[in-house]
Length: 530
Image 1 (cartoon, one colour):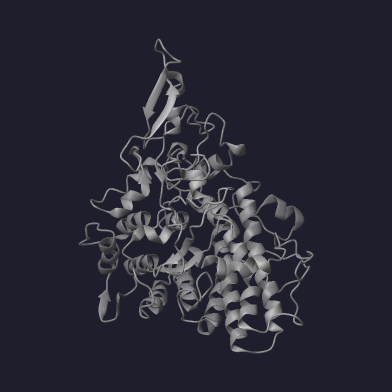
Image 2 (tube, helix red, strand yellow):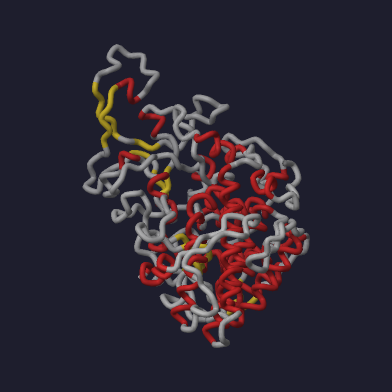
C-alpha cells in the first residue's frame, strides 16, 4: 500500500533545493503548465517530491535535533567509536555551534521542502481550475506550513519565501511574522482539504492534519509569540475530535510496526517509509543491540549506539502499562526462552579484568543495564568492552523489520500527529486556562482525556492531573516520536540538567542559523547567543 501511494514520489522525483540561499538550480523531470497536471493522479504525482523530501530527513536528522538534545535519547561514544566529531555529544550537552552538521542538514531539509512546495504551487496555480487543483493547492500549502512550523520551532526567526525562482537573497522575518504566516496558510487551506481518512489520503494532508498543526501552533503560542491561545487550541482539537474519524487503537505497538500504514486508525499524519523506495528510517540500525540480530531476524548487524537515559526510563513505572514494553532492559532471552549468549573472554567482557585468566573463554548472558557509566567525561565515552556495550536501555518501539533493506532502511512509518497527542494537547490547554468542552455529549476534562489514554494501555487511571503530571504522561505516550524538545521548552524544562548535560543557557531553545548559510547570505541574522 505504501509503495503504491508514494511510487509517484520516486517516478517524478525532482532536484530538491538544498537551502533558502540556493534558488537557481537546474530541475530534472521538469513540470510545466503545458504538460502537467490535469488529472487527480497527475496532481498527486506532481506533489511526490514534497513528501519524499519530508521523509528524507524526518526520522534521522530532524529526530536527532528533537530527541538527542533532551533526556529521552543519547548516543555516547564507545572507545572513540560513535564520536563522529562530537556531533552527538554536542547535541546532548547543548554545546552545538553554527557549524553543527545536523543543524545544517535540517536547515537545508526545511527550506528544501519549502522551495519544493513553492515550485509545485507555481505549476498548480497556472493550471486549469478544478476540484483536484483546489484540493492539491491546499495540500501543498499545508505541507509548506508544516515545514515552516518546524523551521520556526527550531530556528525562530527565519525567511518567509512564498515564490519559486526569486534570486533575491531573503532576510530573516520575526518569529511572530512566521507564526502569523503559518496560521494564515492553514486557515486559508483547511476548508479546501478533504475529510477523507485512510488509504486515499494517507501520508498527505487532509483537513485533520491542518487542524492538528493548528492545535500544536496554538498550544505553543505563549512561548512563540507571548500570546496565550489555549482556547483556540481546544477549538482546533475539537474540530478533529467532533468528527470521530480517528480512534485510539487497542494494540499500541501496531502504530509503530513495519506493516503500519493507512490501516492504523489513530494516525492523522505520518512520515512514510519503505525500506527500498522511501528510505530514511534506521531505528533498528542505531538502537538495537547487535547480539539481538538473530532473535529479531534482522538482515544486518545493528550498531547498538542509540539509547535512553536512566531518568527518562524511570518514568515508565506504572503497573501493567504496556508502554513499559517499548524498552529492552535486563537479561535478554530468545523467543524459545533460551538466553542470548555472547561468546567472549574475561578481558573482552570487562577490559578492567584483573583475574588470573584474562583470555579464558566466557559465555556471557546478555544483560542490558539502565545506567550509563562514563570512562571519559569530556568525550562522553562509555567504553567498548562487552559490558560497556550493554549500558543503556534500548528502544524497541519501532519494531525491527525482518524485511529491512540491506542498506539498513526499514518500513515503519513514523507518526507525526496522532489522536493520543490531540487528546493530550487538549488536556494541557485546559490545564493552562482554557475551558473544558464537550464532544459527543461527553465533557472532556483533563482527567477524562488522560484516562482515555491510560485505559488503552492498561495503566492505572488518574483521579487528578496537573501540568507536571501531564508532561510525564506525554513522555510515556509519545516517547521517541520527535516531540520531547518541543515539550520541554514549553514546560520550561529544557534548561534543567539531565544526563551529562549541565548547560542552562536559554538561548539554546533555538538552534543557530548555519554558518554556511550566513556566508552565502548576509541578510540572515544570527540567533542570540551564537
